[in-house]
Amino acid sequence: MNELMSFWAQWLRPSAGLPTVQWSLLLAAATVVGYLVQRYSGLPKVVGYSLVGTVVGLAGFGGAVWPLQGISLFLLELAVALVLFEAGGRIPLRWFRHNPMVLVQSIVESALTFGAVYWALRWLGVPEPALAPLALVAVAASPTVLTRVVADTRAAGPVTERAIVLATLSSLYALALSGAQAVLPGRPGADWHEALYPAAVVLGVSVAVGALLSLLLRLALRVMSPGSENTAILLLALIAASTALAAHIGGSAPLAALLGGMLLKQLHPRPWSWPRQMGTASSLLIMLMFVLVSTVAAQADWSAPVAGLVLALIAVRLVAKTVGVGVGNVGSGASWRQAVWVSCAMTPMSAIALLVASQFVAAEPATGAVITGIALPAILLMEILGAVIATLAIYRAGESSKPWAIAALGRAAPERDGSQKGTSS
Image 1: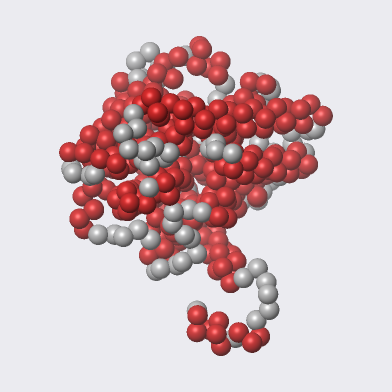
Image 2 (image 1 turned 90 degrees about the vertical axis):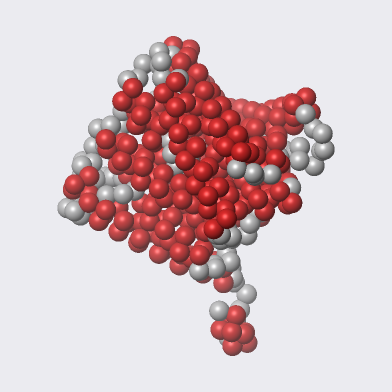
């Protein structure tokens, strides 16, 4: 590519640049592969997106820098913020008052995952400064993957809703704690008392930005139709502005969007649908997010000595989440069979785990090499395998309205923008 550029240098004119062309072609390829994967295997499109990113990442594509920074970091945070805002808007706080065991189940599952991964990696000889960051990476389930799986399988039911809520809450814990913990590595001897202040700052700033976002949208919904094109543009613009603002003043952009969605649900309790006009824009950002995550993660230093640590993290995480969901299932209103499928649906890791890892690597480059070597391969594997496991769980729970046999054999009716019943994804 460099030789080609030097040959054509005298004819080149200033433009958006070659990286824009590369990413455009990469997204075009991801679109085709994602469609083919869904049509002929019945798996969600995200598997195809991740496979494309993995291939180009392993091939040495240099369009993504690690740790994340600049425009790539903003776009990833924006895509995650969109998903978390929508997920937060589906969580009524009144639900926790009527069924507090769901919140208990979430706390038990996240705490058990953190503790199990922390002690397992410590026993395997991972350096002490990298233990807490890697444990927080493991805590973060992926509502971004799960919501795409749900959309592609057209799933609805108690397992689907419970999995989305628990994955969203685990992301809340991971984002809040990682934002505070990332400040401490440069402070020798820092204890939990010193961790309280940065945690309060991250959480306080995120709550303030999220409250401002929800208030502005609540005022807009008083005079604008939820399904209007202008409402969709306003929503996207405000989320983008809050993403940039929260990151600039010391908060967490995805956490602010999540809290903003939850607060909006309380201020505007009437059901309102995600504007249809947001579909194409959010789908493009989310597809870019999956391709970016897999491209970055595939560029990790894959080596045999780290493979055992990566597999250990994944295995311990799977067991801990299953046991945690099962222990917290008592009195939560779900059957034991449903608890098993919920824990399986929570296996994916993706953009939120990558953002958590990126924070620690940027804060402490010395420890960052260890975190990168273990976290990135684990995130890549569980973005792809996790999406497959979550799909299997949803189908086994009987909550998909899209028969897998039809999808796998490619006999499903083509999508026509919802013009036929049950064809929209």
